Length: 94
Image (tube, rainbow, N blue to C red; front, top):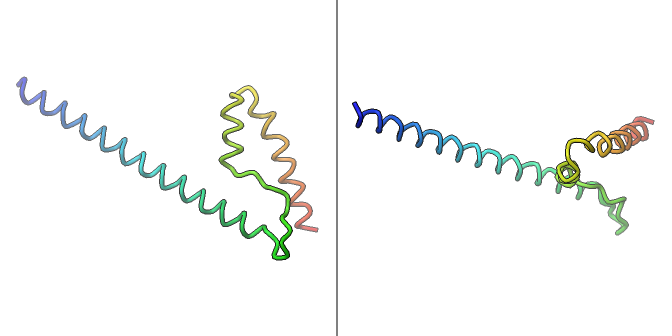
C-alpha cells in the first residue's frame, strides 16, 4: 500500500504542476491579447496630421498604480479615471 500511496501522491503533484503551468500560459496569453488591443487602440487614436492626442494611460499602467498604492487607495485612484471616462462618453454622445 505504501508504493501505491506514493504513486498517487506523485500523480497528484504532477497534475497540480500541470494545472499551474496551464494557468500561467493562459494568463500570459490574456496579458498579450490585452496588450495588443491597447496598442491597437492607441494607434487608432493618433491623428494623421502628425499631431498626437493626449497620452492615454494603458489599463496595465492604471493597474500598476492601484497595486502600488494598496487597497486603501484604490477608490481614490479609480474615481478620477471613472469621472474622466464619463466625461469622454458625454462628449462622444453629443
